[in-house]
Image (cartoon, rainbow, N blue to C red; front, side, top):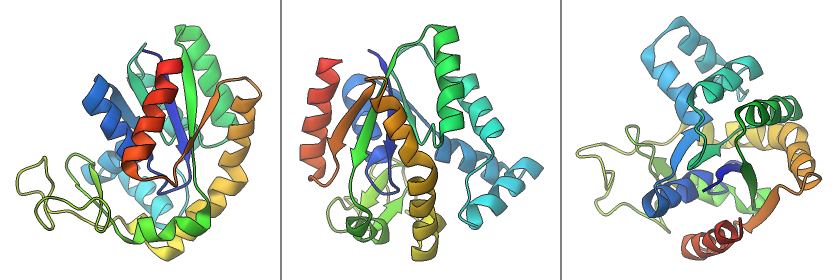
Length: 212
């Protein structure tokens, strides 16, 4: 199976769809957000520096994110979530994949900003496995606890607060949207309607995957 790159606004469902493909097809997800949060949790000087950037609604430096991805990318069955975020990253990523002779396709999870904040405001995540839940539409089986990690208390992400959500959306418009056009021009882009229910999104995503 070809590697997949998921691009979309914050809250568009990248993490949820990644988990579903992991479950169904054995994909491994490389989430830049998870990789960076793990570095923050480690308490290193680099982690503290990354924490300051994220707390101010900014992205980590290109050089760091590229290094994290390059170290972990596999030849197949890999989903990359949250990368590339800008044209510079996209160009470096293409060179990297060409050198490694790895094929990939890009999935754009499309949803308008105005419809996203309800998702974000109701989102909680497991700090251990990264599983995401929506308190209304996709709640955990037991209130406040992850379905998969024993006794793991679900948490709100700081970057889901309204102020940081708006910052992240603005950065997406300025820096990431051009990446969508970049991959469209290379005939590597497939668009997924992320305004559907989770079930319908997954069925649409499976249909797209089967054409690759």
